[in-house]
Length: 501
Image (cartoon, rainbow, N blue to C red; front, side, top):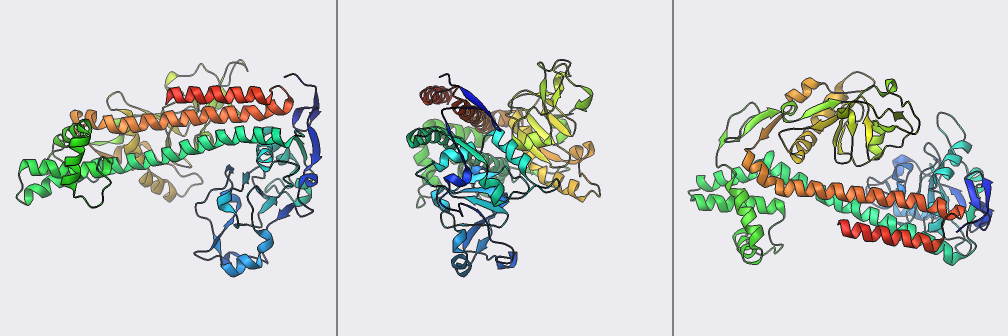
């Protein structure tokens, strides 16, 4: 759909859209409101259980995070009733990252917001709050809101500033709701992928710790033999140990492990055969090593012998010769965010081992120590980051062993009396790992490699959905894309995602 546009503080906007100050769309003069001042609520007033209060730290990408929220008592909740949240409210950061905002959902009704936040409550007969929350998420709007904030060190907003921002919206509430529904559907799918990945990661970590750190299948065999059992008894014990962590066992709480395994053999013979084959590959004895006791026949190797840790480059020395031909730079901030924003660019003609792509294991060894699977597209690896690879061992093995040692690496970095803590290569050599025989690595890889592949696929899907979401609204606002065309785009994207999964 072609449409005449007007130049605005947010770029070209269709002339067919209405324009209003935010205050004109709010329920009343208190539609944009600051949270309770320090004199009304202090940190000492927080209690261990009660009603959650939202702070700036809990404002995610248009979603309120529920982890580590402070609580207020019932008496304080009643006293601060004017600061209660309702479904459809939008909470802004008042200080610091002033472009952060989150939509209040049904589950957060009755919660409070802190004095470091601003609450927006609109007249739902004029504008759909979900549509407005996505309008606030436009990159052009966020750039604008940052530009009007006061203070260089600690930017801040007030009710007058936010009340005066210009909002552009379709006159029809039906159209607003349709746009909001499309964008919200994409967000919900992204969130579902995130939740599934959390479950997969917890499962993989539990399996890895049980098998390669605590050696539970080996110890189960040893305990069965020490109790006078046969080799078959030891194998059954190992199968029980493996099944409990791999989630193969029945959920029936009243059945013992042997009964559960018998049921598994009858109902899922292929899973049972895999479980038995895995258990057979675990030894029934331990041996001494530099790491301490490890399973018999396993090797004790440091991280730097399991994998190659390639440091990145000082990429300020490798600027692109052509502004249209470049790689975005991957630094610690981009690793934490999960995507390379392209604010810094590097030449694509750098060493291949310093170019990263989807599925690569990246380890930041300085500052914020993080180990993650990169899913943000092709990028140039900056210094202070390792690209982790191996010509001998599978990705799941060196990824989870690096993750296993991360807590110790973080402790080492935190103990350094410098501005930015870090680890050295000598610490990779000191990080020891119990490495099983090749046959067990291949067998276990059927489980852990599959989980890791699922995780990567879901993250890439979420990344594609986020890109679609972020591209839709600017096109809708400018008139470049009709709502019907947006529907077609989303339908095609969903069909493509279903085929991939």
